[in-house]
Length: 191
Image 1 (tube, rainbow, N blue to C red):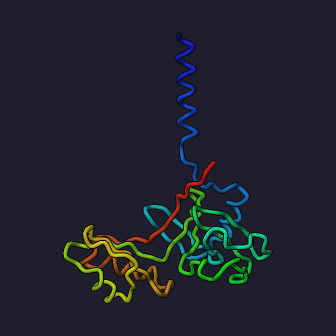
Image 2 (cartoon, rainbow, N blue to C red):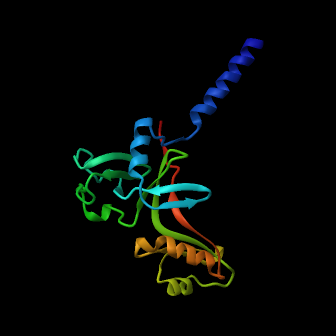
């Protein structure tokens, strides 16, 4: 009976291990490459530091010809194909241009060794009775989504070079509880 209990316990551990989600990990060789290519603006988000990859591009999965010689590195993260180009803008999408997310930026977190997608949206938690439209108007932003019942709005920045300054200004606004970048880092993939 004692042996049966230990076998059963091991079986439980194996089951739990296999059922855990697997997040996209970066190999050592890819880590060195990504560290060298992540030479853009540094962004601090939730106590983690990300560096933008200026030659990175984000597209809908299945829309990029991965045999293109201009692609230095590629990976699939969730429903996205992320690529890093040798010469930005030369890689041709297999389908229409709507498959490329022009405002999305690629960033790398050296600590977690994960690639992140920055959507170009700012998530803002508003104080009670504050209208998202007034914030949009004051900061020249577009409303991507507005959830007034939970006092949260997603704003789109038209000029991505202003993303950091808009974020700082919004966090200083008396009508805003908190403003953060919309960022996707922990993509799940099947084993």
